[in-house]
Length: 329
Image (tube, rainbow, N blue to C red):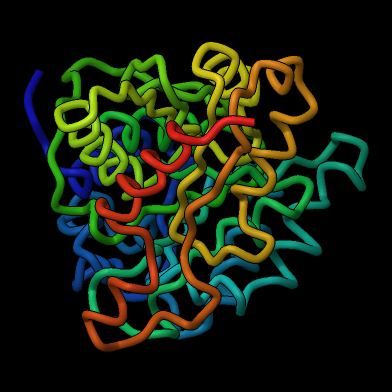
């Protein structure tokens, strides 16, 4: 299979779905001539024209309101936020309208829309452009939250998201855009709500998403070589709905659980994973207390050293893995 960037995988998914289905269109700020804040939609205006690559004023609330309305009357919009942080400006149309319409109309109305949003730190964009807000979105019934970590997952999950009948918040970590991975040339889709085991292991289950999957895989390789510790890395891929069965099955096998995410600790989704595992029979197989490694409860700093210190790094994950493996009830 050819290797393509994460950015290209997302671009290809949108192009293929727009060619396949005339109802699909892209809407957002600077997505046309400029090609999007991170270049994901470059060249799409030339192929599809301004009727389907819809440039908007600087109003995120208007973008999501227009997308929700279009979805309710039969279109399949893809709305792009320049940064995930700006989703906070859209809570009324996203949370009170798009997320609830299908329920309030007894299924007679659907809202098949995707909101793409670059999230996370690591680019020196400071506190207002570097947040990880997945948990806020996970809290809302009616919204699905997707967070791919590889080119393969990004394309397959975005295709499934575009075809879904519900509002999807599609989280793209900014540091992943230039990463490369194998992607099939033939058409494929990855079902939502299905986790993926990125690395098999026997001593500890490590659950992570987005950029933290790659840091976790690096950490797993280090502890395997230096300590003989076998870490199983599980990528949920979809944070809501969460594939608790795959995570619990892994915990039953390894007897230990570490959840790693970049979002801040307080009310972060690591707590949801651990609570969900505690409600399954796998709880009885734990040989050590579950632990979480998360971002600090601070706004992301601009200084690059402080920025790195605010979120988990490979060395931090290595330290936590060793601590858990050496701890027992």
